[in-house]
Image 1 (cartoon, helix red, strand yellow):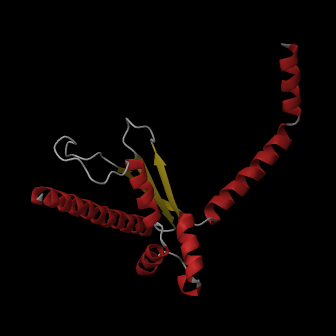
Image 2 (spheres, helix red, strand yellow):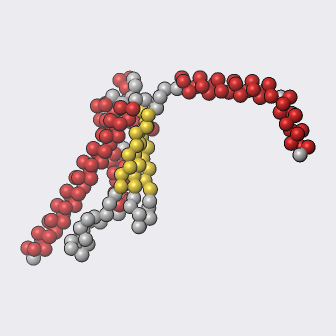
Image 3 (tube, one colour):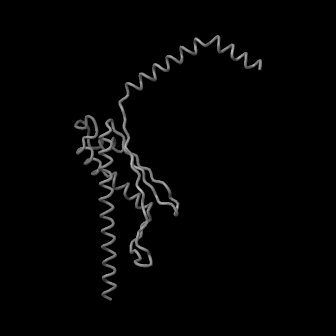
Length: 175
């Protein structure tokens, strides 16, 4: 117990120094918090479900694991054309007129975060997409555009697969 009283006496003697340092650090922290621009993050989670048609009824001619589908979606989403189109259409970045296309793409990719999870076979894979912007409306609009692109790409992919399957069945019926 004597050790505790010793440390307490040291703290009492140096309390003024402690208070000065704590006040200065608090003032700096508050100043930095108020001078930084606001940042809003919009986030969505995408779940990939397995096919709804049983394999016994109609075996798929093209099989792509769900995790690979998410990786394909991610690569297509982050293409140069998509990033430039969204940035210019929604006026996402401040002073964008003065930026080169490479700088715009770099800034858009830096603000976009895509994480995929659940590589295990029994769990459905998830993709989390988020975007950070100085205005909440901009963050939500960009994320909505990302979702529209993902849905369009998925629709095209499914149409292509169903067309190939239909062609296969047509050939089988013809034989």
